[in-house]
Structures are given as structure tokens and as C-alpha cells.
Amino acid sequence: MNYKILILITILSNLSFAQIKDKSESKKFTIDNCVNEFSIDKIIKTEVGYQYWFVDKDFLDGRTLKLSVVAPHSATHPPHSHEEDEFFFVLEGTAEFYLDGETKVGKAYSSFYCPPNSTHGIRNIGDKELKYLVIKKYKK
Image (cartoon, rainbow, N blue to C red):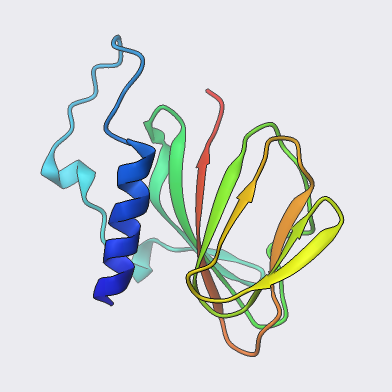
């Protein structure tokens, strides 16, 4: 489990979550609101698994970090597009990444960048749960 924590810390460090561009924002950051441990009681069930928001869009300027867990041979939704770019990072399982009509398979420790307005998707093509992180900044 420690390797997952190190990977998460590295990802978060590179995204500079602590930097706020809008100085008028007066949120006070404390150890209590800056640390979020997974809790099964706070998951959001989906048709094919569940999600857990480590950082929701209200915490900091629309930036988010979410865990998605998808049942074997399933996807949370079909390929789609939106204005925001997005990162996926596979923790466990086998994913098929879809980007603008092309696919590629990725396993644990694979990342997938989805540029703005690209048609993209991720689905579980394995026989075990797929667990991945989603990193995205929503528009305010």
C-alpha cells in the first residue's frame, strides 16, 4: 500500500494543489481538511461500482481527485468529451483507454491524459475490479 501513497503524493505535488491563483479566496487550510482517508461509508455507488471523492470541486478552485472502481467488463459511461482536460491513473486492474477513435490497454501504474474536447473513455476489460484515480479541474 505504501507505493500507492507515494504515487498519490507525487501526483498531487506536481499539480500544485496548494497554490491558489485567486488571492481573494480566503479558505483556511488545516491538517484536518487537507488530509482525506478513504472511508467506505462515504462512497457514491454507481451502476457498475463506486466512486470516492478525495478532493471535490468545492475544496479548491474546481480541482478534483476521485477514485473510481469499476466491475469487470464494464464502464461507468461511454466515450464522451468536455471542455476540461483530465488525467486517469490506474491503481489496479486492466483498462482499455479510448481517445478519438483509438484504443490502448493499460494496467496498474498506467496513466492516460485526455486533452480538452477530445472524445475519451476508460473501461474495465479485465476479470477483476478496475481501480483508477481521476484528476480534473472543473470550470467554476
